[in-house]
Image 1 (cartoon, rainbow, N blue to C red):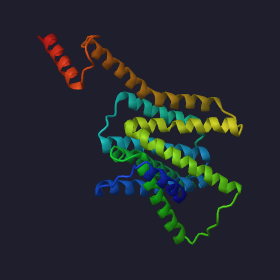
Image 2 (cartoon, rainbow, N blue to C red):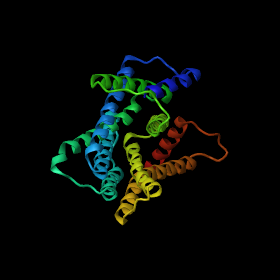
Image 3 (cartoon, rainbow, N blue to C red):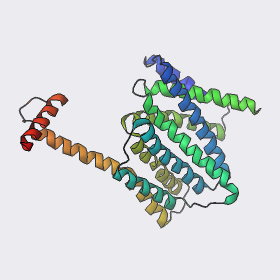
Image 4 (tube, rainbow, N blue to C red):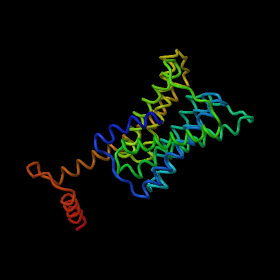
Length: 285
């Protein structure tokens, strides 16, 4: 994270995208990164002690539930029938994709994976609170620095041994991971800036489907029929709210065309609203 933060400083100031933050926004930024660190540590520990499928199920379950809850709590988003159906389909789909097994001796790691998912949901969703005022480049640069400083403090507290970077496979994997978090960090802030939290959380579940595909293509893992059905359900769950949004936009466009002549200049929203209101009054009369 510190390396990513150093890299991101260059384009941040080169493109003149740095903007002084208010105290309130700085609190949100620090809270986002701190809770995100909890999610990262929790997911790492839970994946060590749980079967892969079970850990994924609990983690993504926490993300989807946290995303829906935070969307309602922070942004007053409505839980529509379509979103409820999508939520149910997503949970059923993940159950089919991952072979979930619950062992009483690992109950604490099940909770840890769920908490990690909830923390991950806060990390992605809370960016909406500040992304309208600051660039994704600035938010991610600060995020990397806060993550890195927290990680160094934890490492020093645990007296971990450090090693210099070398041209070995583990360090090449770390390099690829750094590139990945830079790219995904930008995409997450940009995406959630333009999507509501609940829809965005559903789209995040496509990572589960992608993981299954990568496992089959790269590692030649066998896909069961249940996994295929589950993947299809997750895809449907992510697509349903988007299809509804497209249909609503099409209806709004049709209404706009019905009150505007093809020869008229493109009206502003205030003009369109007045035309729709006058038409409604005529129908009532």
